[in-house]
Length: 499
Image 1 (tube, rainbow, N blue to C red):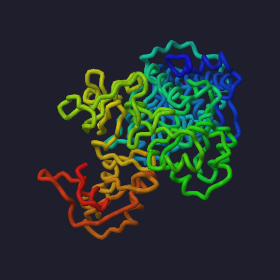
Image 2: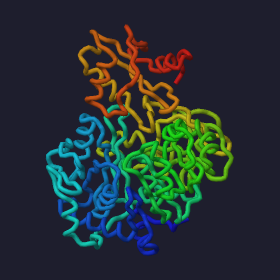
Image 3: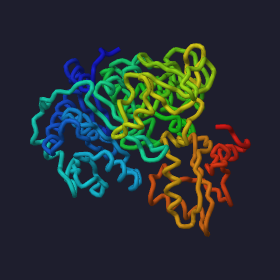
Image 4: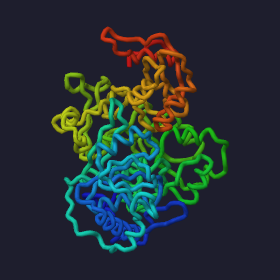
């Protein structure tokens, strides 16, 4: 296992000293060594400082997958800034809220119409219609690291949740907590510095960012495409020499749905970290010939909590035991610890968890109690401490690896003049895990196609409901709260479920 470090920047410095010429990034035919990446991120840091970035300032990254994305991210860290990644495909309403709440000093983007606050400067790699040219600024900047003192308690990143109970929450991590992320995978997956980790999700997604962190701590390489295409996956595996894959169960299901090819069993790929992969695990191992598929449990706020370790027998339904340094406890509604096999809320004590919710001390106090983070998820443990996830306490829909807020969708659909009431739930889907279904009580004539078009103008593509059902009324409690568990149960064809 790699020597422990206190931050991602320490890990980078160590690798530059020990194996500077070794490839760190493999992308779109490019290879960037540790030494070259270090120099370019130093230049990016100076360029950002020249744009006014000071210690603690947020810098938004609204970019697609590219080498420049990682150069900007590590440049922000070296400048003392706080990396704030966003999905550039989010709807205008959500982007406006997140950027307004984060108040970045600079936004690195290719979109001149990004709804950033007036105080935020736009910048891009190359000429940008409404911002600074980072390429030009970097060419004029020194390739030595800025002389800035950063400690483990200084903020390093600001990640926003998917807003499952209203507006998204900003999750703050420090250089100390961010530096821990990724290390636990080295032993759990049997990684070495000769491994190439392939990530096929967007870099703003925690799965892909985790691959970058893991490769950095292991001293190996990370590879990623500009965008995932199932038809191009196996050629990419061979071209990159990938030995480890970070992905989602939905992507593995897509690969299984394609006709077999000779490339599937002739690659170097041996281990897969597949979030939500349990339903297809055995089929993937049998067809693709990999040695191990790991499942894990975690969240934006809690970090990685558990992982199914290499060489251990598979326990159906389990997310594995806690990773080293992490403690797990199941509690009832009164905060009492529950014994094995009793379902309650999953709570976590971890050095890699969030530090606070940005500008929200009340929510921070609710989530953190005596050093324990309350996840809002339900589960139980067995006698050996292996975790079994049961359900989410809140109405989050996990569609294709994305956590989708039912509240946001409901708020959006209610804006349609012919919608009186709406309730949105997740229903089972064989490929995506869950599909989004909207139950509509209309106040006038409205069709499913009309609502899809309405939602598509205001939401990200993955947030737009595909399924609609029109009703005269919705099931409600005596206090007029919609009984979503009944809608979920009816959609599964099993009657009401107590979820």
